[in-house]
Length: 386
Image (tube, rainbow, N blue to C red; front, top):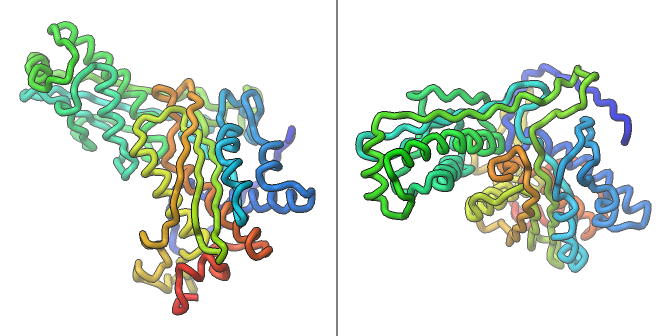
């Protein structure tokens, strides 16, 4: 749409504050927007894939914030799931987008310090939180890539001993900014290693002998994204965020309406660690399926009514369907090696895709989460929880 008007209302309540659960509320918005698309498609006689294909953003298009997009892989994610969606009897499809970075005119920075120890190791200091996204692993990979050092001599450190402020530590922002900063620090370390005659290779002992000659030295790297525009600045070309991640997911049900398979295609810019990335997406889908079908936190008069984790409807391992991941690499010019970050977007399309699959099974539109009245939810909850 060429004109977008967004109004936001913040409301103070006595309910307990809630966390992000990945995506910072984007999953709830996607559930509504993608549900609208499914209803439009139904009226037009189109399937869910076709209406999304016709309206998918591409390079050069403007996002809702006005930002003109560079190379993006949204249409490639749609192509990757088309056969799975159209080949299933009961399936739902949804797309998702999630910003990376704070943006909106706020300086976004990451800092890294590499410290060489007396024993010939390199400590990688970051102020970002390792929250399971594999941050320290990809930072170590970055040092190896830039210096040729073997992984055995690297130690990841989340510590305040070195001054490495980084702002909020969200799961997508962390690897993008931290690895960009690490590239800069590692290149300084490489110059110093070249100066002592280090020849890159897999021999950890040889690496330690060279590093000992640099003992006590530190190498600082910083990456700052300071070019995003404030939402009140209407005189500049809008660039509200560093980058975005894009995804399409398909949820498939069996003949009894139970979860059978999830097919997830994500444009991640660059796959830095395939195993970690697959784990991120599978874990996110687990959370998204729980949000869609079974999880809830009932609150009455500001008081939480369920205080036992086992009674929140969280999916167990046995409830998980097969998950198939496809990763699209449409490099982001500002990301480390082209990476966009994938820690948050994984849950964004999931609940909407589940709703679409349920609609194809029992022909019912659903407007609220969790969708506990569905066959898929009943199969998970059992008769005692329905």
